[in-house]
Amino acid sequence: MTPEVRDRLDAFIKHKGLRNTPQREALVQAIFASDEHFTADELWDRLRGKEARSSRATLYRTLGLLTEAGLLQEIDLGDGQTTYDPNFLDHPSHNHLVCIDCGKVVEFQDHGIDVLNDCITRRLGFRPVKHSLRIEACCESLRSKGHCRNLIQARLEGKRLPGKKR
Image (cartoon, rainbow, N blue to C red; front, side):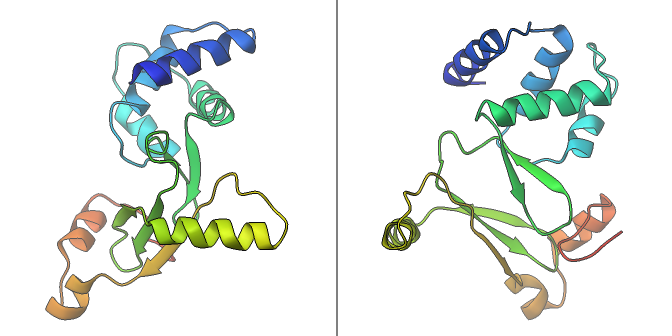
């Protein structure tokens, strides 16, 4: 976790009149340990068996708190569940390309999209604050080779794929 995230979180918790508990701290450390996207269930699985035991209620309250504080962003990757992105503080204007076959997610930034977004919103009388772009596509591997390592791994892990319900 970066010092900026720590400072913003501590200030927000103080502003809300809350205290920093060991359970919340364990969740925050797990969330910001990597830049990977995650669902609440994936985070819960990651924390199972750790020292500071938390309840699911604490997990959901902490996710809500971090989202409200602007430290975590909820994104929709097309799989019917809320995914959280801890990687947008350093890159607030990034987008997601999601493979509809294997579920692979690629983050990307494009200055042209940022300019277009700014032009469109201003032309329509708005001021852009943030944007979220999700492009759904088919990865080249499955189409060209007939198999995809990401699809096999996703199925082995039991991950929900975009547009497909379990």
